[in-house]
Image 1 (cartoon, one colour):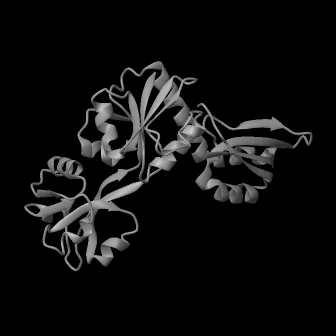
Image 2: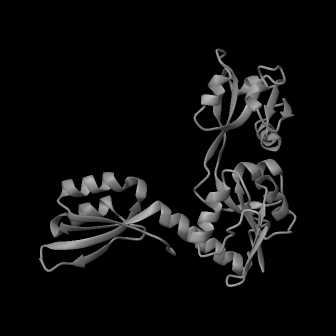
Image 3: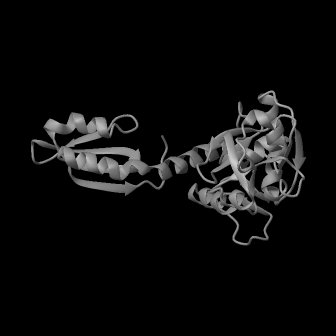
Length: 281
């Protein structure tokens, strides 16, 4: 059976279980369960610490797993990203004492506190910078005030915690992270993993897109199709009213209201939006 790692706790856990359920896989109902078999799909799920997942996959003990891009890079494991899953987004940034015009070049020779030493070391090496990386498991924001480090590198969401600690973000983002599906050998995936990949891709796409249906006069259909070109092309069907047609196209969910406004202004009527629960494209 295919062995897949799933986060057992943390910010990725609930969303990872949800996307697997939507993809048609069984998931545990008791958080104390460490292993769950899904014989109908030929898969066994192993619930592990998110930081350990890349290591298990990298050594070949497990065929694939769901973890964060930041955790994969930080681990240095011999595993690769095969699919971004579009949840668990975060930004990894540098921050230093507020009031100083910090630039990334200023970190050379400084002490950098972080809970992601592998990720930071990788960044420093790629950018030809030398600095001392201080590993901390938590409360990274306090390290500058306590004299442990000169700057920090950490996950940033709103930045409010950094402001409270007297720190300010500087430089471009070190990394844009999100939940990802990883595997050791991306060139030759087992058949069961190919199926998992297609199913998860279908869920990701279904979450990002909706179906948009509308009626429009034939004279405006070309302009309407420029607004809603669909993935391949829109579906156009005749109506009983000979000078009108019905149009159906997949559009990005985030653009739905703007597109509806544009179509309405063009003369479209009967504009309907339908959720997509699954797809194969």
